[in-house]
Length: 457
Image 1 (cartoon, rainbow, N blue to C red):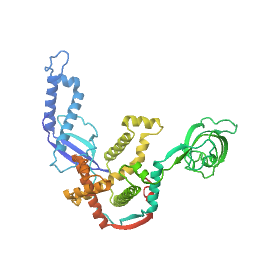
Image 2 (cartoon, rainbow, N blue to C red):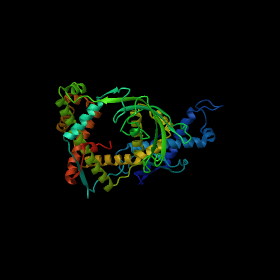
Image 3 (cartoon, rainbow, N blue to C red):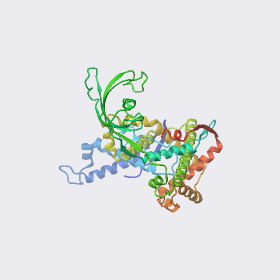
Image 4 (cartoon, one colour):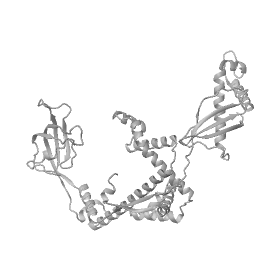
């Protein structure tokens, strides 16, 4: 198909969308039509004609409108390919990588007239970060002392505890692990259908069971059955229980106790071969907690700053970009479940949920993440922030120190071009935030515990 001469009109629309109207000159329309129809005539086979000898008039009579539509589509594709590939033409904006141009209507092809068509597509959003007025970043104040270390050591003990059976005549106590079977008893004295649960395991006092039977099981022994009548508060969080009185039959089939190991050198050596003494483990735990604290505080500060900049510097996210982000999150969830996207769709449907509803719940957060990323990228470009070889080397050293891993081993993990670019992006982003914190107000925030710092994770 010969090259075409076009004129165009580009219009920006809302939500970072655009409309491009293209007109192909009548001379080119006629030339392209003639070449295309001749090519069809040489290749088509019709009864009564030898291949390549079908008269054009016969072809037009038999397939006229369909042929014209096909030639019109081919002309549109060719015109758009030529326009979008000509990067020197700055008179209009190209579609984003996520966006496919959508034809508004397929115009009728008339070889006696110019051919005009219109496509709509998403363009890269305009990102201008100019307003920093009133931005205040509050830095949480988090103490990390002996109390916090003791709590983490207790977690280590819990993870390495040995669970053993208690004696048959031992009564259940708080923190015991019990196995029970139960069912609800109705007003008629019979078992409520669907309420039976066999071999349910929970820790007394942890409030892990639906009917909150912890206190009622205290003192029960293995093999004992007990009838329990329980009245729930009117303001109970479970609306199915609030203000109601229920009766249960509960049988205890096992009572176990979690034996915590002593905090000593032996435990440290069991946890990791690199520890020789309990102090080795304590020092390493404290080191890791300090790193986790600083990393989390940095995350909270950067999120606060970016959210304020998003609010003060509006960005219109294209629909195709948002959809790509949601699709990516869905694919990530499928990988987490070690399944395919298709299987995840079926799993969600089988659970009674709707994929559309889940994606709708994610939309606000996904849109915010995209805007934050766009602001970061725009500011890095605008400020011409680069990552030098020395700075990248320093980043490798930091990772090595934080993870107690030889630096050469760290570098091996970043040998691919993509991994190298990732580490360079990290350096550039850190340099950007260092600059921004000097330009906005940074204040001390509230004092919070180390555990509360990670509460919403």
